[in-house]
View 1 (cartoon, one colour):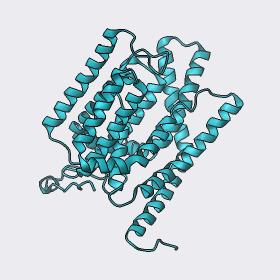
View 2 (tube, helix red, strand yellow):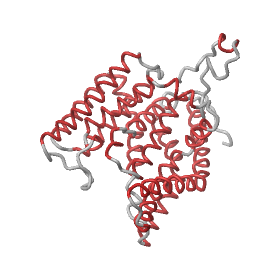
View 3 (cartoon, helix red, strand yellow):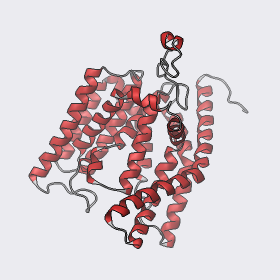
View 4 (tube, one colour):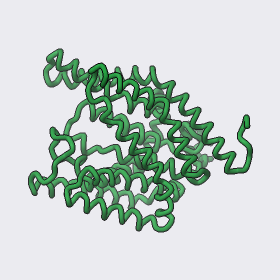
Length: 353
């Protein structure tokens, strides 16, 4: 479990609200800045799909999402089996994911919105990593450094030979395993020197990787034919940016935690954290609709940007409100699955049995 923050008697005596203690968010042993990082990562995904500007590729967020998920799964494996954890995660996804799949199939049958399933790879990858977490945990306990080093070597090799999709997948896997390693270390924040070094090396690796491949010319073909070589299309760069931004988030954990105490902002972050799956699932059709409307209205470049972003956020917000309760129900189901697994592990009969 993550060590709980202890109150600061001096701060409390001075009557400073919110100073000296870190209030847990959502769960009883969650770190606020981790929840903020994950929320920012998902919001960045929404903005990137709405406005795919090249410079946004440098603010890579998917490794952050996989890192946090790996951390949470690593903690769960301390008290439950891999199968129990997988069942819990699947039950958490099943209802909102199933509702979205029905929508996606409807779009395909009716010829409605195109490409509404392009982002579902994340769900499949997430479940695959959960299923493999028992193997990852065994490797980590054998040698955490050796496991991450081996993954890094494979990532470099895949990038060099031009297998970019596999290399990017390995970057996501590295982020997941790094999160599990962090969970094994009780989520203790590394030293400031380590975080600063990681930030520098991560950004440097990304810049050098992009510069190297651009210097060679068109040696890499991105998965999207309309996309030029970018940090997101290179495995080494993806891993470097993920490590760098994770380090930056830990360096800024104080301000991130403080944001939870800002009136209105903290409530919004808490709400979004309970709805991240819904936001992720439904933001893509929102961006597709926003872009189509922008083309139909023949807006100029500036107003098109404002319109697309505004409509995307509004439609995503409406979908989050409409379908968010499905995520709440799935969360309750997942908690029951977790409780039964813990009771079974303790040798106690589950309630109602």
